[in-house]
Image (cartoon, rainbow, N blue to C red; front, side, top):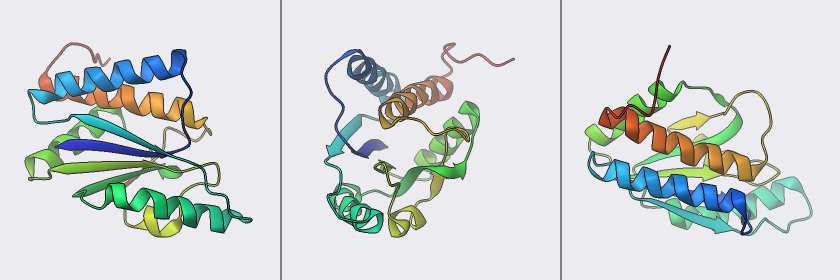
Length: 161
């Protein structure tokens, strides 16, 4: 199952970007043997509308074509559900095992996601109740994708207890 991350905003070069790319690469390499990955990232400019609603709508219009071929969709949203790393891995594994070929993961801009895009998600996911900068949310997502691949592969990276 290929993974496409579609995010509003562009990360600049620097240590955060380097670490993001490191985890995306690890996720792809580890996941390859178990049918998870590769992981691709597409970044889009923030909407320019005068209101939050117009900005969200413009961002959704940019994100939608990249997500069009996805069998499953995860929306990152602060109002979403929190999952343990093991539960996240189990969900990805179940979708893969059910024949999903492409997973899309969408990260909105500063105003959040357009409700229509969020509503079509199979899972609305939050990284806790706190608000995170988009760069850190991307980095945490990349690490969790790598962790999920290691859990599904039976690799000792993830430890519980």
